[in-house]
Length: 256
Image (cartoon, rainbow, N blue to C red; front, side, top):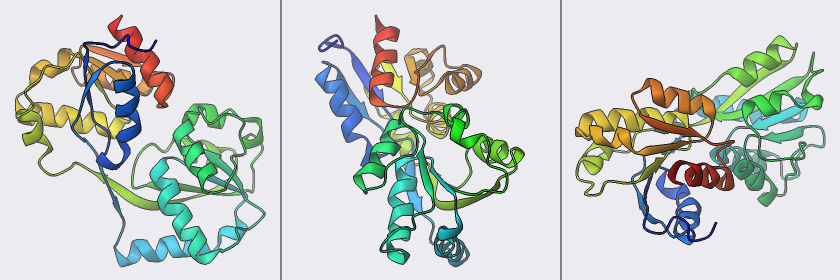
């Protein structure tokens, strides 16, 4: 519904290097858009972490399934793979969580094994190709921490699962101060992950901007919306996934 957000102000919270497309979609729909990042992405630099990544990369030809959980996992993971594998091994099947992650893989010349990129962790685990994985070596490219649902479930199915942790998510320096000085009252706020939600809740407390909890809060899933309600947000809405279309549809529903 082009233009249906005319006159609405939306506060987005995506990392600075990933906010452009989402903000452009909102502006194309007529919204006024502000972005205060609630996540920063930092590649791991500790010697032990780099050695672990190198070990995972060198053994990549022994992997049956490779799962990328985010665009950042694709960015950093494929960089490592291409450094050690100028031609990727033929064996692994590649999976992505979310349409943006699937698109990032395709842009690096790597097709996803699943038909649809619009996948949550639960959708991925329901794929027929991941039901009989006993004895398979599965490598999950991810950041430090986060949900363990995929790994736990695939291990329960008999797979040998390893995480290749590539980056960490941090709260951008000065985010509470930036939020404290934010002069507007948005009609809605968007968060694209549980980590961004937690950081937003922390910054709202630190900045004494409790009124922001009354804005419509657009979340990437029903699960994250439930977390938002538990954190005190009054109007959380769960999108079908974190893709731009799904988030925009949820935003329209919240503001109509």
